[in-house]
Image (cartoon, rainbow, N blue to C red; front, side, top):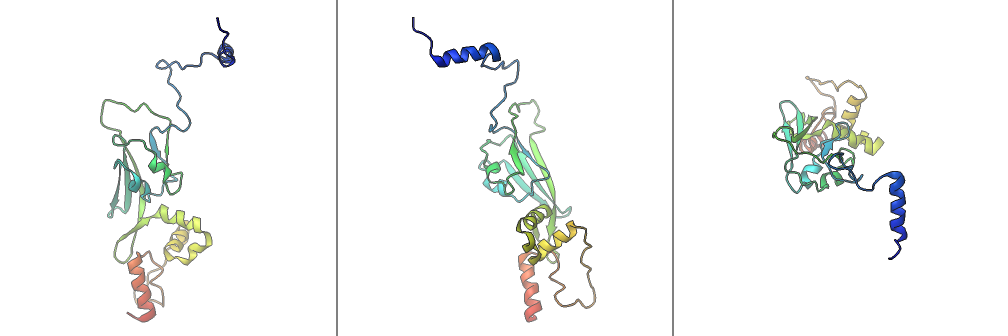
Length: 201
């Protein structure tokens, strides 16, 4: 009879002190590996609703809706369509806004509860009403670029409001020179304002 290998002997000795190597599933839930791609959840504070995860989702398990009346952007994750490929986590702009959990037992009898929704405030152009992005997105960009944010009026305004500054007063009669550019404007309207101020168009 051949002698047992050293590896097998080591496993047998460890099992004496640490218990059996196998798990007690289904009587006790098995713990997945740390990098297991389980249920996906948003981080309400870190997600900026930039839409990167919606663009890269191959299963169309994500949708983004803009409510212009309530000035809210809503992103929905349809978990029943998700294939848990991890693209949304890999390409998240902030790298912290969305993540996999270790939860894997997602079966249930009813259809309710399979959508994962998050909402953020929208910033609209003050001239044409076009969607610029979410306030959280502008704040994230402003904090990333540092003092360069003060060169961009949209970033400057959102930082001023974040730090408690009052909104720029609107002058109804004769607006002073270059007062129009201190407003939330889309790229098209900002170009029009600059041309009007510089060339009088």
